View 1 (cartoon, rainbow, N blue to C red):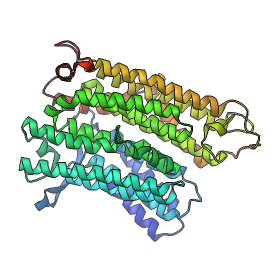
View 2 (view 1 turned 180 degrees about the vertical axis):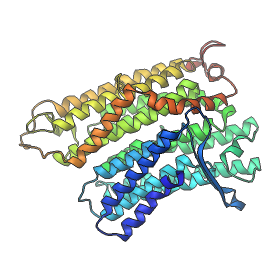
View 3 (view 1 turned 90 degrees about the vertical axis):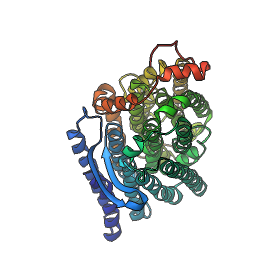
View 4 (view 1 turned 180 degrees about the horizontal axis):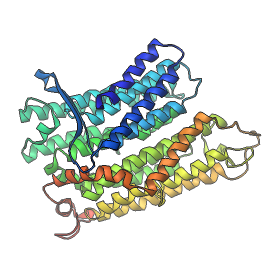
Amino acid sequence: MLSAIIWLPVLGAILIGIIPGFSRTIALAISGLTLVILIAIASTFNYQDPGLQFVEKFTWIEPLGLDYQLGVDGLSLPLVILNALLILLAVIATNTEVMRGRLFYALMLLVSTAITGAFLAQNLLLFFLFYELELIPLYLLIAIWGGEKRGYAATKFLIYQALSGIILLAGFLSWAWFTKTGNFNYESLAATHLPANLQLLFLCVILLGFGIKMPLVPFHTWLPDAYIEASTPVSMLLGGIVSKLGAYGLIRFGLGLFPDAWVIVAPWLTIIAVVTAVYGSLIAIAQTDIKKTIAYSSVAHLSYILLATAAGTPLSILGAVCQMVAHGLILALLFNLVGIIEAKTGTRELKQLHGLLNPQRGLPFVGVMLILATMASAGIPGMVGFIGEFLSFQGSYTAFPVATLICLASTGLTSVYFIIIINRVLFGKLEQNHTYLPKVASYERVPAIVLAVLIIWLGIQPNILISHSQITTDNIVAMMPHSTTQIAKVENPLLGGVPEGGGG
């Protein structure tokens, strides 16, 4: 079944190339079928089992140690479902008259294959192949259908992402050479013990590779350009799921494979998290372009995932998974709404947008959804954003109280820049040059409604998400040899480690 959800989109891309005139229908059918299969997998998933399920394995290229090995657990299942959902909604959100539609939809399906394969791969070389496969489709999606500076943004995206992949490949190859295991299977490498200095070396390489992908300050500069210049459907994917590959990698390949070294670097990761949270929030406040504000807010909110992962407590890792899902849903909704605003008004500038909540001449549907999305991003209780942040901060506080409090304070800045957007864009007098704004089409409404329903539903019923992930995240933390709380105290007292014997 796992192979089906990976290769069905490839089949769809081939069909789009063969059958002209039905590219959108094929893309919708294939992405919808993929999501249905994943829901069936989730319905039979044993959430009491911390190990891999639905495992598929056969030897592919034995001399290289490259096996085709797939598996899903409580860490990857929510992200794979999120990817399938966002691919479907991004296809729906695409303008029905998009130029070169056959190529566009085929590339979208290839992105789906690459991201799903990366989340499911249990061989490091196989993971790398899928990890790199998504670069070319995304590069083309930005370069062909992006904004005025699409060439620059796409090239910058490609360079940064390729560098991330090269660093990871170098780390994987060096690691396999030192361990002399003869293969790159995750379980084999996880069972191999390395000296602490080598663990620390390989972990730092992996952190650098995935840090570029997330991205974290100072490796974040590709993100605003790519998010801003990409079309609305592509922005939904970039913000909603692509950045989660970096966060997933930190947990799966960083914390999961190098627990001894992780407790050493954890205090320093929290410093990066604090800097990223404050920097991203302050830069977001200074923007006058709505899409750029949301892009920088994404950087700030990704830092909460890093903080939770660094803490390495059962609650914080569970919170990191919830925050990844919450961040993906909320950011996809925000980019969808900003895309509608730009399409109807011709601008994203705060100085030129007023009164969109006007019930007769404005965009009342977009206004209501924008208020909901900003409330969710600010962590209002009853929405999925609150669950992710609450679990992340509560789990991180026992290990790094000062860093957690600083990040918690930065969430207040989220309210600042979103209040600015709501106040300037939705209220006031509608510009005179906009007598009646065009109506929002059904293909534009559907993604927003689906995402809004999920944001509220998972906020009210978070156990739907928590129950499928908790056993797996607890098992990952159980591999930690020491309390990250004690390491925080010993390595960096400025971060506020609690007294000996406390928390974590």
